Length: 354
Image (cartoon, rainbow, N blue to C red; front, side, top):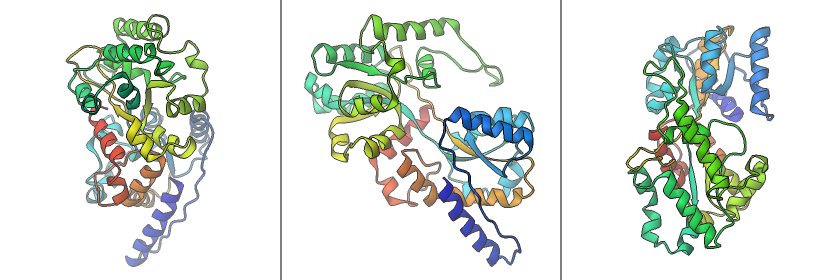
């Protein structure tokens, strides 16, 4: 992300020079490698003290609180002058940065979350290559439910193919919402302004997670205490058949745990989170990271075109390719190696369920 901003500054300065404009842009980035919660607290304190940079990156879910507090400025006026340059940004991402009828941020990247499956386990169980290849389509058609997944995971475990059937995130995070949605829950009312918690669905969600451990015995009781590194390595090692994860995990498997492209193609696949009821619609969530401009910025007319350049299709695709995220725009010609990656192409299709 930081490198893209620096390259964007070079491109913007060349553009300003060609236009005869006197301004030049120098980017000073501060790259945070700590926990997201600590980063969020750091940004909040900066907003409160007034010592905030022109541009802030954070998850799209922060837009509402920052906008309500007057910490960031709406971008509709600046966006109007750059509509053509951003025309192929996926529409769902503009929805993610809209609040109270205005656009408050520019998408930086996004991702999809899904259910990974060890296809080699299904093959050992006796599934044909055709049946394995058709599993994602069955999920999308509502013909393979969350409980079908549970039953299949039990079969794999009982056959001695893998010691566990399903791992999920060990931490409290938004991924649990996917199971809430799978059981028919809704996050907001029809206006989108009021959060909704369906307690009957919540009970089903809690029962499901209880039963994973104590009834179906496909998830370890120590799930919440297993380190992230152990979990990710466990999927590469075939310890469990299903992993409820995200697109970036494949990048981590490749860079940190020795997963080869051949091993991925031969042994693994993915699909959206299945519905709990047959005939239901699968779901997924996405977590776009977004650029926001401080309401205290003295140079928003330079900060915004800098972000437009940072979001250029080639830079954005390069970031997505190496980080395991998804590009924000549909320009497949920008980086041939991105559009040639079957995983990224297929994972981008999951955004329609987000």
